[in-house]
Length: 239
Image (cartoon, rainbow, N blue to C red; front, side, top):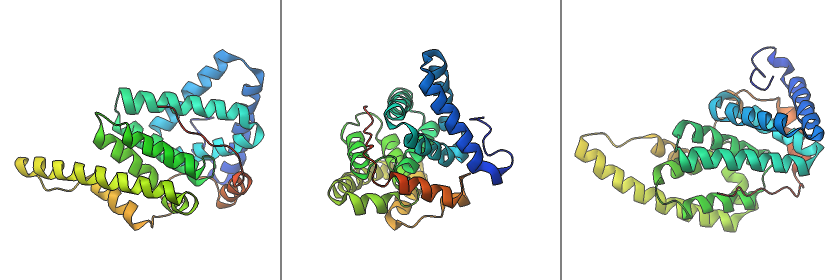
């Protein structure tokens, strides 16, 4: 069901998401570690490999947090830390990182992750990047160009967001200079995904995600946001 959600009867996606949420909560409460690890592995795979459904999977976490925040926090920490460590740090897989950071952006948008810890985490990535500048820059910009994320961070964590903006500007300028030199030497026109993402981030006006991604209804998203608006849940992935 985790893989196929949204493939059929999309008008029932909210109901199907609730069923899926209840199944996960039941699994968490059983405490069967083998089954739980299988579920975590499957959750990681669908997030990493199904970009058109990352909004749905973020909404699923948003629903689950409302049932049992302690166990869901532990689940989410494990998913994020394992996936980000493997795909960003070890394998440097651009496709999977883009999907993970888009999902991360939706978690911020849905109020699952607080504005301040989100900024702190993205700053941490830039500060501690030693070998994969382009991938880290791409990943951070992917999260920030997710619908309304930059606006939320700027509004709710302006100090940290200003620090993040300055570091992004420096990282982008450094990377851009090197890329221009390299592309000119190779006879390429200097235009790439980083420039596209940078321009989207600068504009702070993005197409509604439901124009691009499968998603739950607007009413369900608003319900999740309203119930999590005062949530103490703040996750800072440990990388």
